[in-house]
Image (cartoon, rainbow, N blue to C red; front, side):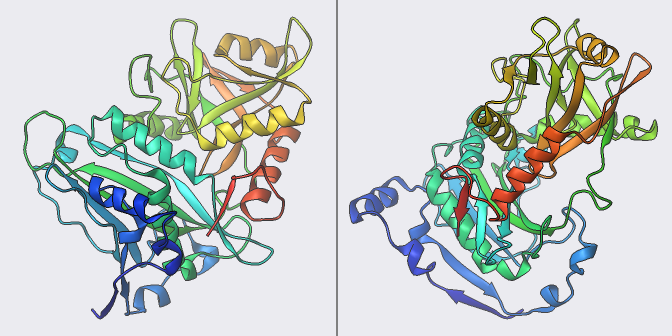
Length: 397
């Protein structure tokens, strides 16, 4: 396979705010975009044989290149590299395979509908969460320069910009991942890491439109608990959800609504944060309710935070962070106070909810509601450059 090596990144990323800062990065062996090298794939076969835009399915088509960097005890972070997408070479004794020492992020890059400019949505929040996940797994190197890694990812997006499909609902999904490459079986904090970033062109999450999802809360399984790791994005949070999800699907429900405690407190839905828009029984006020981050069992979603900040700026209803219970939601539905409900996450932005099965009874919910649509229109409008969002939300590449 023919490849071309370019020694450094574009001039934009070679420049540092000052030489002193660049030298400091080098001395401390941090990830630095100034040290980024790019090896381009010459063979266009993969690109030419990619699926048609309308045939894209989530996460099945990989772009031509990937970003890699390694950490070890002696050298700390290596210089980051963009190389042709390929299989990894890693020891079968690596602790990522045996103890689940792996964390990741989910991001997207978009082509603006107005001028096809490239942009990402609030990548600073993804970098902060990746660092938090690494710290929770006692991974060294979690103090990496988050802005520098963002710039390296931006360069990866530029290299593979032809893979980004154009059109509303289309984007380039970005998956930063850190795994422990420590090649020993002892149960201990890793002494070496592999950071890699792969990308995948994706289409609209709902092929048939803005389709509501049916949930079941009748599951004996628990996703997360206080003192656990539900507030970070680590692999171990997701593997145990496969069986409950399969059971839900086999019984006609699209996702599991995760509950906790003897009062059946609602935490998350599938791999998303959850919101309820209802009328408070005591005050009669409309309020948007979502579980809080205070207990450590809720993932601090980028979309979740964006929804809360947007809703507060509208000033049209109360924003309440508390744990709703299923008996409360059941009563609100029976009394006509439950207006709408939706999940929120990077993949779908918002997912309307039309039904929740609880204690064998289907609770029907109006879908799709006006707030769900408004949030969808606003966030996707910012992502695709149709409207100006708050400062810093749209990271232009």
